[in-house]
Each structure stands twice: as structure tokens, then as C-alpha cells.
Length: 210
Ligand SMILES: [Zn+2]
Image (cartoon, rainbow, N blue to C red; front, side, top):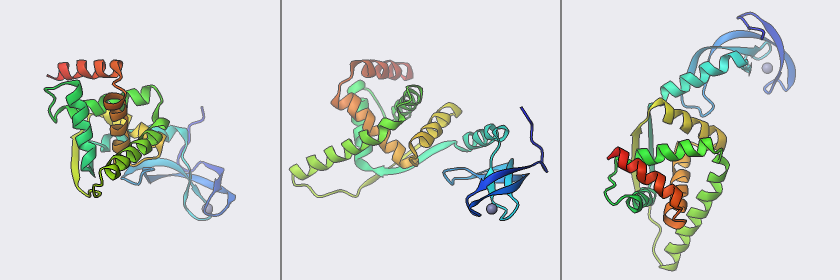
């Protein structure tokens, strides 16, 4: 593999110039694709004409991923209150002793499973079905829509951060959307589907966590 250095040159398609352009490699701070933060001093190809980044060589991508992972130390979101109610109800179904401390464990477990089984694509439809079902129940009982929100805040270890980032990339969702979709999926498996395998796995987790 050819290792690139600062000052190396090449050609790439520049979206800004709408042309194949000459480029040169230099070190830049590169914003993460979700716009939250930057990776510093990454070797990238820069358009000779307009100075925008037009190429990120393979040798630079691990550094960008590591920087992002290191930066994600906690997951914070403000969700419609019903999502946390649903998550807590699913935890209670699995384990009657479940406290709020299990939320992180359940979410971490799900993130890992979804990444390993490459099921990220299924999250969006699962979430849409959940939203529709909630809306339908609410209208049937003639209740007004609620704007109540609750805050979910979790410190995450590097493994959970990695799974979370991988799913964000796979689904093109932001943190809040992804959390909502994962909760919808837990609801579908545990509260709707009563999936015995999922429930057994979660029950073992809850026991270990004590
Ligand atoms: Zn350009």
C-alpha cells in the first residue's frame, strides 16, 4: 500500500468545482459526518482550485473513527416522555425488580445486537410502525397529543459508543432519532411480540446487573 505524505498530489472529483481537479495532501481538522466535533490533524486531499477537502485516504479513516469514539463519552437526548415510559414498561416486563439503572444496559445490549446482526435498516420502519400505533391508540380514546418530554442521559463506554456510532452511520439517524427507534424495536420485541429469546437474554442481563 502506498503511504501518502503531506505534499503528495493526485486527482479527485470536487463537488464544489463540479470537475475532476488536481489536489494536494495536507493536514486538516476534519468535521465528523454528523457535524458534532472534529478530528484534528488528519491527512486529507484538498482541491487546488477551491481549497475544500475532496479526498480522505484510507490511512486516515481509523484516526477519524477513533477521535469520534473518544469524544462520545455520553449519550444525551430529550425524548417524548412516552418513549421512556415504554422502555421502562419493557424492562418491568422482563424483570419486576428493574430500576432505571437498567436502561443503559438494555440499550447497550440492543445496540450491540443490531450492529452484529446488521439490522440497522429495519429500525426506521419499526419506528414508523410504533409512532402510527401510538397515534392510533390515542385517537381511539379521544385524547389530546402530549408535548411532555423526558431526558435520557447515559455515560457510555467505548464499546457502546462504537456500536452507537456504527448504527448512526448505517441508518443516517441522529442520536435522538436512533434512541427513539431502538426503543420502538424493544417495544415490538418485548411488549408486542413477547419474543421468548429476547426476553430470556434481557432477563439474564438484568440478573447479572443485579
Ligand atoms: Zn474545488
